[in-house]
Image (cartoon, rainbow, N blue to C red; front, side):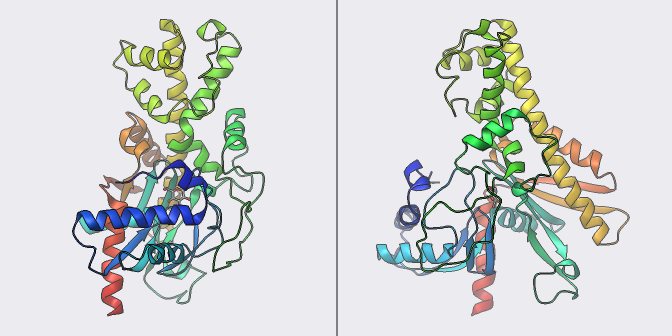
Length: 379
Ligand code: BGC
């Protein structure tokens, strides 16, 4: 596991892909594999126009990434170029996949009824197996079989569909984000070879901003700030930290809701944020966290129920038995998200019998499985 430093996320595409190549080199060295030219599967968790199994044009960054010179270009080439620039190892990049797809594939390996993949982590997205006859964009439409569709549902709402649900906090979160939504997405022309400078038209990813871990903590901070400014919390005292964007980490939401009832965890977190809460303040903060995470779980559950019920209809079945592979920190680490989310999906898709399986390292293992198949087919 390597975490991507902030300057690589927000610098240039070269900086970002050089960092990725450096991590691969380091990993190969640690496994004593540097001399081998291995097939590589590249999980790239952003919206792309997939033109081939090893070709994806980045449409727009999400989740706070802004590296310039990547949007509009083939990210597999960006990786290949970075590997060439280093020159200390060779790799055959055979496939590029979204993390939802990799998750679905790795879970399918264990449970063949798994035909949906979902991530609720820093970002949020889902993919599913659609009837080929319904896929209009590729040759073979009208034929039998199924094809995986990456919905990129994080961008749902970008044409105004969620306006009835968005609150003042959501608008603030969007405006302050690195991928704000003043503009609607336009198709981006590929301009390989790179680099095209930012700014580019970007997708605000409004649905994702209501649900995913990148934004939940910030939503809570804005709620608390408003309550404190209205003298309904902390005796009206607002610390500098609470006024600082990004100071309320999403993991605090999990920790606060995971408090055993003695408020110790809640006190600790609020003290570190320079606040001096009363017992009632702690209870109110917990309620704010519950409000934000419950809304996220229900909105996300509504999205998945819509997809699954649609699959049932497209298959012409009265009842559908299906497994969903899920990954992501919010789903796995938040103490109540999962249960509320499952309940919502089951309530809203009553004709479907749904099993959820938690994926372990699915986005890496799924990409490896896909690459193994792709390189076998090519040879
Ligand atoms: C990206 C998706 C990705 C999701 C989960 C979103 O921001 O657009 O491609 O699957 O995050 O990582």
